[in-house]
View: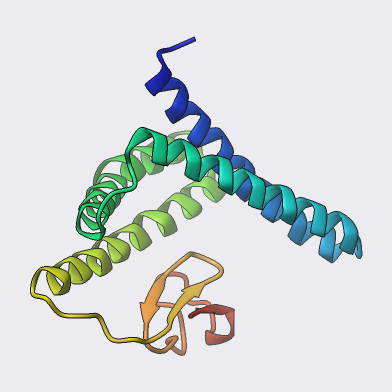
Length: 167
């Protein structure tokens, strides 16, 4: 067992992963016609979110918007410059085409996220607000765009109807 700070980080990671897993499980339960089970998965996912938020707050990692943007920029940069290229290389060595594709999509999209966060930070530092417009997220690769979904995703070529509107 690590020290308390390490334990809080591990707990945050575990709770965050449980949240996502349970939300995906809820989607599957819905597809299987199990509405009550889907609702259970979503309820527990929300509880896991509460736990994750509490752990992150205790770690002191929920900061000002400026600091949160700077951390996001750094994290996205690491992902598309170092983490995903290494993952892609390993997937290619192992001839794991599905992993190669999913890592490639993620790497390309993380670069887009990096740019979106940089734009937001520049606006914040200039005392400006970003336009109050929706974002659209491709449900195949995660490509994220403000304003209007493209006719075709520039990363994975998915059609416009595969984009989810985020208000």
